[in-house]
Length: 165
Image 1 (cartoon, rainbow, N blue to C red):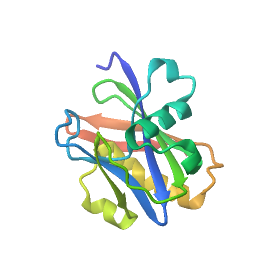
Image 2: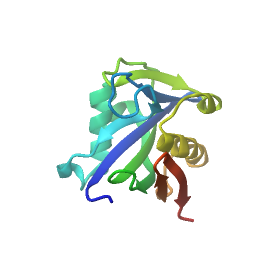
Image 3: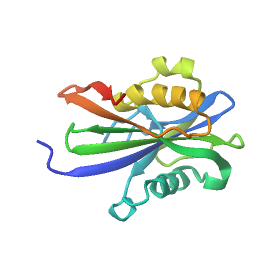
Image 4: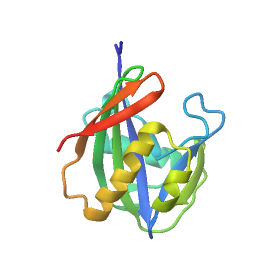
């Protein structure tokens, strides 16, 4: 039974039809060699400014700053209780200039949506990243409120996500 809470940001940047994603390092304890967005843990003092937490993680992991990104937007929030109660905050943005910076967390890559199904994603990322790409395509400026989802987890991982309508 979950008796603790953590929040994480996941950022997926867009540039010319591709999305910047992270293949986690093989040495990572959680989800080695799995693909996801850039991001990390929301610190307790950041709970009142989730956007700032996401921007901090983006800068720490890639060196990319807010002035490099247009339409930085929270698109979806997924809550699940796999081990602990976990909130995943998915952000998108449009990167103004192509970059492929080094990343201590793993290897960054520019990926097309058509390539998603062939990559070994973290299960939650696989369930949400294609949806935030659709959200970005339908609402490039990020004017729509974020969608909320509840993840149903079993021993083998994420079983399904139920999104509010």
